[in-house]
Length: 254
Image (tube, rainbow, N blue to C red; front, side, top):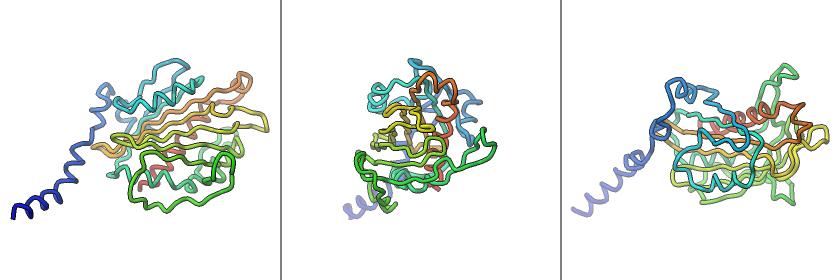
């Protein structure tokens, strides 16, 4: 009888126990005022810009030091930070499966100011075998049973501005969420001119299930040659790519 009661308790507790371990958004960011919180809950999220060497202002406290280690190897000219919340009751496994659907990046729309119309940002999106072998490989089934501690994925995107672009994506399971790090391993070119050299574009996304839904912290930055930087609105280009990537994950969680 005691054993039966014990197993019944174990069967009932996990959901409430796991929920109790979640933080709330206001626990993580007690300094955010009402207007900033409303932006976090909006479609665009809360956006902040910083110049090189400026401290990050939305960095989630308690995030593993790995984020800082990755950032220290790439000191970008400027950074774009975003913080938003998806009101969805999902877990780390749901997030991981959404991040594995690389082909779903294809055809995502953004508004081009120069063309004055909405166009696909990524005309093609595929997983590739490695940095040396850029042949396409299929995405895995989106029904993984567990989240690995670390996984590396190589990606080719046919970018509306930069043509074929190549990235290494690393996924890390953190104590509370998933860190997704994206670095270009080939130059990003505009009309055959290198705009961002290899490993000079860095984007990191941290996803954490919280009481209110899924918190997403996004960070991106790039180093750009001075001549090109004066002719291209790189902060806008980076911001659009951050938004498209976040929308990709949001759709995958629905």
